[in-house]
Length: 351
Image (cartoon, rainbow, N blue to C red; front, side, top):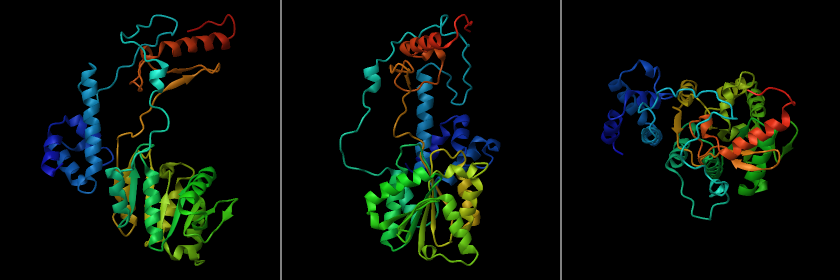
């Protein structure tokens, strides 16, 4: 899509949709009028055109879906709260039939083998991380690990050390096993509070606290040889930077990270990724690039597993609706009532 086509498409959208698109991209976007908002979005898109176009198409699709389903044409209109009614009666069931369990399970499983083709945002992220720091904000299951693996591979091919951090020992152990299969056990090491293996490997897996301590030692003059050739630091689950207790560890790790190393922050749940990218730009020697993608590659389905091992869809539809009690699947509703009868004390009044 050319700049002129993108500008024309933005101009066709209601201002409420543009404000939603500007969240996390444009500072104080709520103060800008429509014309100024479009200018700021176009200015921002010069760094991440693919992410802006993807999010725009997603919002347009949501708006069209709501219009077709008879809901408000305003994409940000408040959804009225449904009446709180008992599951035991008084509910008006939708006219459409509920999905069957077999249809709800259809498509779940291991997909057939097919050639791998990187998504545009993955290609963009890999190109960017070779030149500057990068923050990746994409939904769960979109392929963040692919970017991390390929970025690590390229750094090691350039004889640079790579450090991959996670917030949990269990996740670090999982990544150690996974990366050992990909790169070979002789090229991967792990450093956690209770495990140290192959500490001089070109790819080191560790918790964020361990890396912060290594950087502390380097700042105090106790230079660690692993930091001399450090070329890439991958901070997985980087939304922990907002954690009230542990967030300071991520902040200090970023602040003390050697300037020659590229930072790659991965997350599926950062609420303000543009603010994080702007902060990295302000304290690091290069401009941080934000790579954003809004479409879920793996759609979500909601089900209910009763203690008697009965499985049923939670809602009448395969996907997750915007949620009214009347959208509950009839079988799920029956199982709820059955569980209520089994667990509530006899004689206790039910709401």
